[in-house]
Length: 492
Image (cartoon, rainbow, N blue to C red; front, side, top):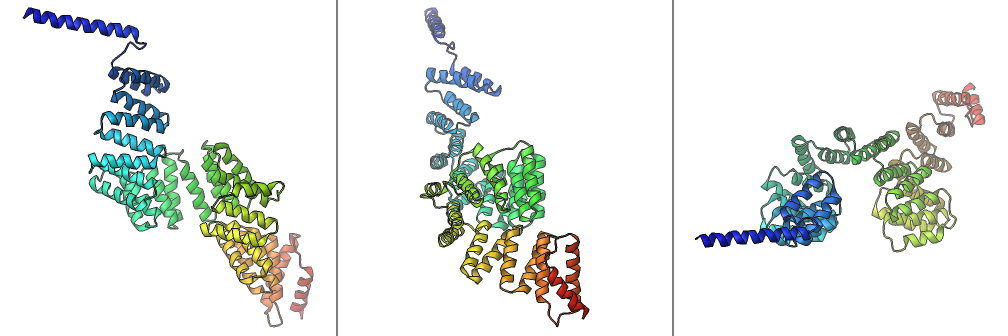
């Protein structure tokens, strides 16, 4: 028996000596994999990411079959937002432990973050074979389908996940976002109203605010978006949404103010400057839009932004060297921005038939292009197509009531047609957006003058003379001869 114990002790001594020898040869002292992983995790907590990575890469060479090493390297690359690398290591870890739910979920979401959407779908489908009734896995599968734009199937998965686990608020939230996307606003509201009661997080409040804006309830939408900022002043989408709400409420100054607050909070980004540029485009302030689009390019390169810059430059009359550039940049492009650029180029260079074709193609893709409506109106005015000219003037003013030139051109168009009654109506409408504007008030006087005849009551004449007196005091009156005719009429 003593011989037996002696042999065991000898084996232990030999093993210890071997380990000591190995430590001397290894640069890290060859700590066991678990110890190296624990050390790496401590470094990660201290935000010493590069040190953690170096330690784990060393461990990977020493322990090439360690799931823990691979998994922790995945965490490192997750932290560094190198999601494709993170996915690679989570997959290696999963190969060593193919029934670990956390690894499936980490891998799937890393793939989604790396835009490897089809691979993510396959990962979650593999996970479903092992965990068929797990709400987190089903939610991940729904996310992959969502990214692949299979929205109806994604919604089914989210509904299923929430039915399995009513605490899975992510599934409820994602279901509501799809409801909103597909236009099922009532169902979306039911879900989102419940969600903000259970968990009034910024993302949930923001999505509810978006829904309220879509439903035209701008007051509630604004209150919800403001709550988002109160909870998280760095939530940039909420500022952009507030600007959109203000624009929809026709308060453009307030819209710009919200974007200015975001900039003052140092939330500078491509999204912020794109929102600002689009707002300036809506105002037909192409100089300011051009500056904002150029700021966008400081944060991200995008062909559509390049085309929008060209649109602004051409609308501002900068044609030099543009013809070949427009041709090259729009080659093979099938989107509203490319068609709008081609339309603007042809419009400004006098090829109105081609401009009309490209503008109509742009509108087939999206109706949110008031810049196009105005120029189509001008094209049809030139062509003598009264029906279409009026149609597009009205559309432009409906979509962009702060476009002064559209109002003025439409009024003058109506006056040239001697439709003074309709012109007067349009002037009064325009004055709601441009109160006491001298140009519009002069046109109002002239339209009224042309409507006065022998049967007109003295009251209308007196109102016109009162308007003329006001304009004359401000040295902006343009129709002295017509005013004198009215004075003769009233004194008879």
